[in-house]
Image 1 (cartoon, rainbow, N blue to C red):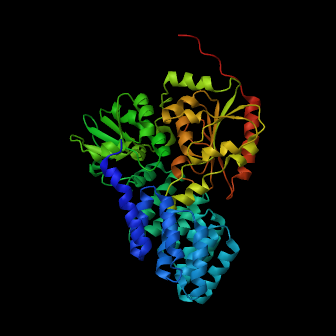
Image 2: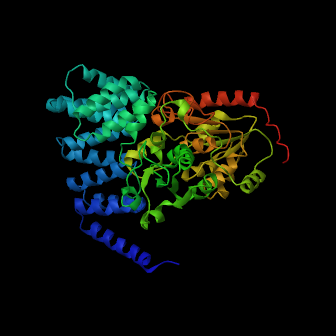
Image 3: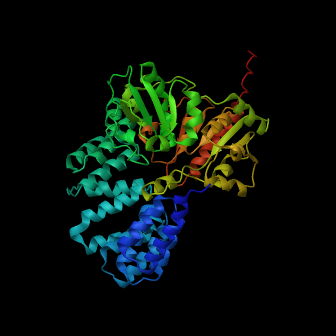
Length: 526
């Protein structure tokens, strides 16, 4: 039943929308659209932006605010191009508008025009050459054009002019082309130059992890500010658990940070804390409740949103789950907690989903797209790490195996348009990660571009095969083809913007794997 406060929400928002549409100001548009985007009402925010700018095309501040919102919360860089072209035609010397247009052109794939506009800006504004180079290298890094970014930064480094952003961009470029050791001195220099040390220190930590320096890397990684849905959750303000803190008899909250993949990858160390005498509560999103409750019976598992809103007394420490490698003292591959399996699917669910699948083996699970987040800083990342079913399945099939869909979210709908080799689709019956884990226990191989299924399958199930963009986090063994963090994981890393060439490599490996596959021996009855 809908409560009265909820019933009042829609009329209140509609009233605000009408007021902004009738008499818009840049600040009013910013406040209302930000609220709508953060409340997952992106379509309403986008419509409002279009309505406002269409009736105020002579108001540059309004258009500038609209494009700023589109940059931050959407992937509609095509609309940014249209709006900025209009402003530049009216105001040919508007440097911010030209810069926004150049960035949007490169982001939408019109590189030649975008590069030309940047060259024009640099020629016209020689005193701002460094600033413009910062912008150009940043958009190239954001869109995965790593070699181009590195060439520009290496040329710029020969001029002797250094700024914090250029130095940090150089460090990021080297790290992302798997030259993490070369990136380390650049990150150290960026930290020396930075006013806010947090950002380059985080980059340094990732580079150290990718370079294999786990001791320093995990220590520096644990110095970041946690990225949580609500910074007002009461447990975030508890003393943060650190390596060496006394655990015996202490009550500790470990909470989800960033995404499902990080939680699934690192939560295995919960058992280490419990065996050291800690009383552990896991605060995680609802889709993980049933899986983690069954997998870690000695821990208390709670839904993070409701738990965060109602304070409980008596806890000594809290920590984001990705801090666990630092807390437990991971300093090398050999010190990674590796008790297998560390996820436990419900046997009844395993049997139920097994009955839904075709009997022929081997069975291969497929995931072709990652999560789709709101903010633009994540939108470009999500776009780089996602493919589509047509490209993936066309490269893998036909193959003498049963294909099983593991894709979740909006990209799941792509299966409706697929006309090739049949793909079994049990995901329509899935309610949470426990169900997904149960499906995985019926599979023999998993191929995924998303880390969550890879880490989930690394706990109890079939050997995973990760297909990753060229840019990826060092916490997942970014520079190699395998990683000890996930037993049996083999990584195929894209060498360019498109996944298509990599899918051909994966397809060849899959056919070889199928040719060598042997059915597992049935287990004797207990």
